[in-house]
Image 1 (cartoon, rainbow, N blue to C red):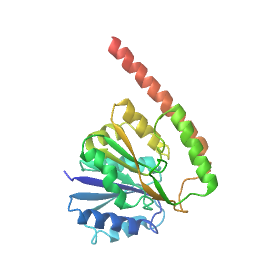
Image 2 (spheres, one colour):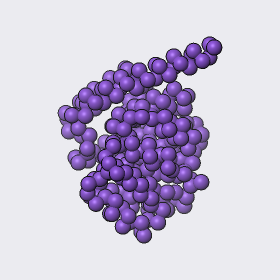
Image 3 (tube, rainbow, N blue to C red):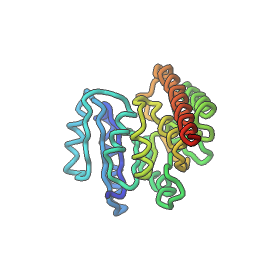
Length: 247
């Protein structure tokens, strides 16, 4: 098996993804580890696939997985995680908002076997924000996170940061059960992780906002609906498990 798999979900990322792929390739090559880089194209309408394929001579361990239609970031990450061969599997945003140099400290708990999942966080005391989001997006993000902590994930201050690493076992068990394709897939992933008793570490990282981010406040109603769907599904699973134990 490969030591490390890096998964990038991509939708119309031809203008942003190149420098990110090259930085990850150069960093991992210098570390002398075995790795693969997987780009899962989520039905892009630009030339993302052709551009990434053009990099395969420069980055020979670069794999492209196309999707016929745009289904959502969660769908793309799920495909990549289940296709990966690495003992450790990390997904990152294509814009490189969390630089590759942060990888070592995020992977450390998995390497030391003190955690099964390690997630980057923008909101811990030692996190570094190089370029902040606009004020209204910060307010929205913090409010949403408080709601998520209260309803679903107490103790996790930043469930949405796009820099998360999993052991192969955790990735396979969690993503094979995921159903949500939209932006709130992170919440489903972490909720399932807790229900399956995987250990989660939250690690402060450097992060820079990209003004071209595809997250929109218009997504909020759907994400709130997903939040309650996840809670309802988890409650049902726990109830069924309790009945099985009692029988």
